[in-house]
Length: 166
Image (cartoon, rainbow, N blue to C red; front, side):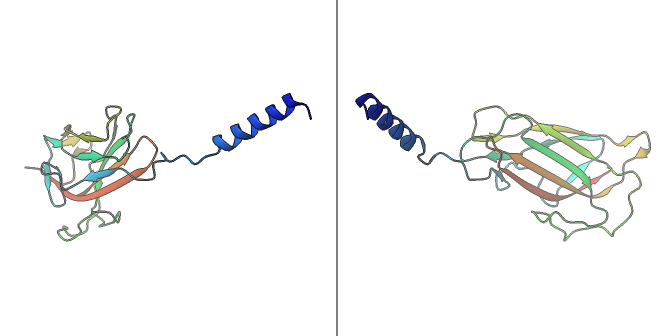
């Protein structure tokens, strides 16, 4: 074999061996929704009021980087049938089960600032008293939070809250 061929073979072999090393920067941790943050709202058992604005305060964290585009989602829906999401939901203070007539539903995704590994939210949510069908049903609701980091890992928290009319 010619010296140029041997040199090419050795260079190719070195390139293959060095490019196949393991990537030690792979993120394998889910982001966290810190419910121990002193200003967190809402928490299990909290009450929100129709006809008012609720300020949602959460501490969101990730070991590497939080996602930015539509990486936080909030879902509020009735729990009149006492269903569960198997997260933080506290079922100890439920009203008697009932059939929904005009339940409130809120589903919204939010962008987070880019390139952060910790972020404290201060999201304003207006809770209308009624829609075209009339007053919203008061009672047991779930406040469901979903957070996705920049690498695609996701975590969820479900809280039991009340939404009532004053």
